[in-house]
Structures are given as structure tokens and as C-alpha cells.
Length: 482
Ligand SMILES: *Cc1c(COP(=O)(O)O)cnc(C)c1O
Image (cartoon, rainbow, N blue to C red; front, side, top):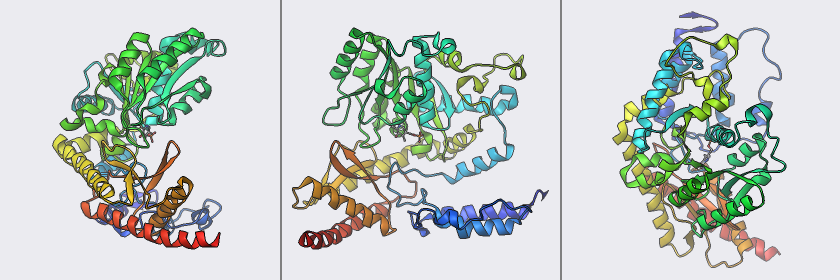
């Protein structure tokens, strides 16, 4: 194949490069070792006037771009939520990009629309959710969550679609979350004209889960003051600790109070495909909307987030707006442009279909079980050590912990642990991140990579202990100096 600056050999070359990368992603430093601005400074200020050869472009990809990549596919990537792209899904991405369909109307690619509906039914069944839920694919949980809350808002007041938020100043909508709810809910409140002040943070118990009695009290107070309780967001697997809000109790309150219940299970929801972890989504069957992210812990590459919605008609009423040039006479079809802000949509269902088929449900379960077991093993090492402590329950594959030693001063402990994190990450052997639990600084190890083995987790533990020793020495010197 020739033309437009490419030939068939270039495809073979990139294919070989990808295949080799997936054999050894661990040969790269996991965290990019570049300074801010370094990559940009290495590139020309303006686009070329004349076309360049693929050889030249690809050489610069390897020489200039790769050194600035943080390798999410590296088996020692333990930061944020560790993820990994299954190579089979990369093949699907290449095919989807090749076909370059915009799956907005059924007729703009019938197979893209129909495959999406089919894999959404497969996933819903694997998760144990009832058939009343319709699954729809979005790019991210942030957008899926925004979309669900837009439907919740319009369900409460259908006039908003035409007249806007005219009552928000006098009778504000309220959304209930906790301090551990993901920040995209607050962003959605900003974008929907609800406002950050109307996102109410309900207190948590000492396991970082929402207190249902406090929720009920907040709703009553709001009603008494003329405010309008609109939505409760319960999280199954919070971002800091992976704690689970008591969804069955919250669902009961939501039903009684007629408030939309959104369950954010972006990371942990997929665990429900494993029988031992089916309880992850317990109570979610009563929700109005649920988000799970196959691009997080189901080995699908960025991006693919799924919204399961009880009343898909409400979502269509909120978002459907069909200009003349997009009208069709097709009957009994789904036109996915009716379910969100986007018109043109990527053919994302293809990669999930490839992954579900290549692994099979049992294959996926095996990996998820393995990740939870590795996290439990790591937590066991922390607990067995007198100098370290686990800071939160770890129901899935994330552990929050810190070094304490014989220190008692909280400020010093925080500084000490921040120092450990910096040393470990600078070493290039692994990449961890941190969070805060109340006022407590916590180190955080997340397992979610297909290639992570016992050896990688043990290496992280060793690197942490080494860094703690070095930090001990460094801070002793510090303390003497002052
Ligand atoms: C990761 C995460 C999100 C955000 O996911 P995106 O797909 O990156 O928008 C939202 N909620 C929870 C609980 C998460 O873990």
C-alpha cells in the first residue's frame, strides 16, 4: 500500500515495535526522568512546510518522545490506579482507527452501534446487574458521571432543558457526596449550573464510608430550608482508599426521598465479575445510574467508561437534539448521539469485545483475584513490621500505609513519608503515589497491571525499606542542623 507518505513496511515496523514493547515494558524507567519543558524545548517551534519521511518521524518518536513517557504498562507502576492495556485491545484500537467510523447514527456504522449494545449486555450480565439497566460507552467516568447527573437534574425539573436553571438561586439543587467522592462530581456541579456550594459533603465513619444517618439529616435540613435534594453519589471503591459506601442503606434513603442515586464504581465495579467480590455492587441494583471503567481494571486501554442507566429514556430526553441533516427514517435502531454531548463517537466497543473474548470471564477473574491477593500480601508485610502501619482497610488491590518508626510528631512523620516517596520514585524502580486520609499523609500502592508479579511487589517493599533507611539518615542530619 502506498500513498500519503506511508507504505506497507511502516505498518509492519510499528507492529514489530509494539510487539517488542509489550514483551519488555519493564526495560524503561517507569517514571519519566525529564524536567518540565525539556520535551517541548527539543521540538521545532513550527510545523514543517514540507512533508517528512516516516523514517524521520519514527526516529524522533523514539529519540524525543519515548524518554518523556511514564510507562503505565510497566509492571512496577503502582501509582494512582495501576492499569494496563491488553495487547489484544491494541489490535482492536488499530482496527477501529483504520475504519475511522463515527458511530453517531446507527446508519453511520450499524456494526459499531449493535456491537456496543451487545457487549454492554455481556458486561451487565457479568457484573450481575438486572436487565433494566442500559449500558452506554463514554470516554471517561468523569463524562459518564456528568451525563448521569444532567439526566438526574432534568428528571427533577424537565423545564430546565428549555428555560435553564431559573430556580437555582432560590431553591438550589443539592448533591450529596463525601470527602472521599471523586472530584469529577464537583466539576459536574460546576458545569451543570448547580455550583460547588450545593455539593454537600456527608461525614464518613472511621472506614471512610458515608454515614447514612448523616445523609438523611442533611436531606431533611435541605428540604426544610426549601432546597431541592437532587442526587446522592455513593462510591464503590473510593479513589484514596477504595472504601465502599453502604449502598443498600443509601439506596433505601434515595428511594424513600425520591432522590437520584448515582453509584460511582469506576475502579472497583469490575471486581463484581468475580463471585467472591460480587458484594462490591450490592445495592447498586437500586441505583438510577452506575459507572464502571473497563479502562481502569479490566485491561482495556484508555479510554472506555460505561454508564449503566435505569431510565435510558430520561437520558434521551436530556440529550437528544436532532438537526435536519441528521434525521433518518431508520426504525428500531439506537442512535448513540442521542445519549450525550458528543456527536461523533469512537468505535470503543470493539476493544472491549476483543478483551472479553480473548480472556474470557474466567481469565479476567483470575487476574483480578491475583491482584487482590498481591495487595493483601503486601499489606501483610507492612503489618508484620513494627516500623510501618496500614492506614485503611484494603478490600481490593490498593493499600494505604506509612512509615512511623519511633516517631510521634505528625508533621515530622509526614515529611518523612514524603521523603520516602520521592526517593523511591527517583530510583526508577517503581512508581507510587500518595493521598491524605483526613490530616494523615498516606503512601499508596495500587496493583492493577497484567504483568505485575510477586517479584515486582517484593521489589517495591524492598525499595520502600531502603528509602526509609536513607531518609532516617538524611533527617537525622537535618535535625542536628536545626
Ligand atoms: C478514576 C476514577 C474516576 C475518574 O475516572 P476517569 O475515567 O479518568 O474520568 C472517577 N471515580 C472514581 C471512583 C475513580 O476511581
